[in-house]
Amino acid sequence: MDRNDRHSSLLTKVGFGALTFNSLLAIYRSQGEPASVAFVVAAYAALLLLFYFLGKFERARPEERGKVKAAVWSLTTLLTAMFVSRVAPLMPPLVAAGVWIMAAATVVGGFWAFFLHP
Image (cartoon, rainbow, N blue to C red):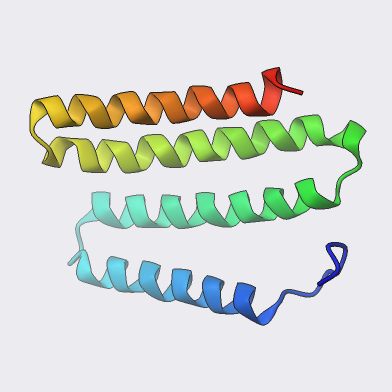
């Protein structure tokens, strides 16, 4: 498939459909718990923005990629922090610390790969 093609592939549409269905199901199953609904909505919005900026990154000229890289890294950092903040409290303290350390290593590694390593 041509990278510059503006039409989404069937697989992309199926993926977004599955993401939307799963998000709606999670909101339904939250049984009116506002914090859970807010988490799902924020994660869904962040994922949509991430995919938008990833597509924009692929189409951008090399000199225009800096700001898009920053948006992609910021969104991945946000999503990492969001999911770790939900998973870590369910773990024993030592495992939770390991989860936070791995998340921090992922964020720092992403920053290094995007901005410090040409």
